[in-house]
Length: 135
Image 1 (tube, one colour):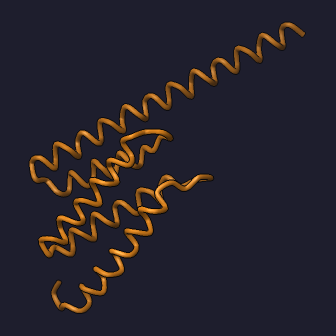
Image 2 (cartoon, one colour; image 1 turned 30 degrees about the vertical axis):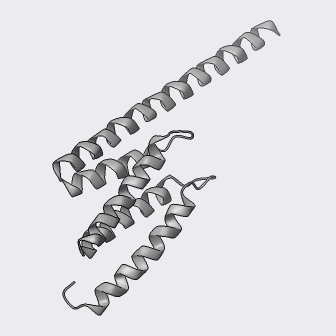
Image 3 (cartoon, one colour; image 1 turned 180 degrees about the vertical axis):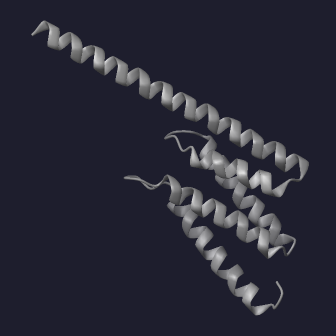
């Protein structure tokens, strides 16, 4: 009986350590991707900024402060593009934000408020595009 108990404790310890390492690695990579998005924003590279922020959300870890910040940055990119009347880029930003949260959904689906906001903006922008030939 003591041997079974020892094995169970060892297995539990290995599982706990493995999960902690996985979580830590994912969180680290999330910060790296967010930083890539920030650097791309500073250099004016819209596509790389979207990719960095989107990748940060794809590496969703519960309790991370990076996910809401990356979501806000994607939303801000969409808003800035709309302000410049660049409907195509605004749609790219909003769709990236929405699809990032769809991608991380499992038994728990984070970002439902962001998805709803993006759906509304996307619907409006698609109607705007259809109303303006060549937009």
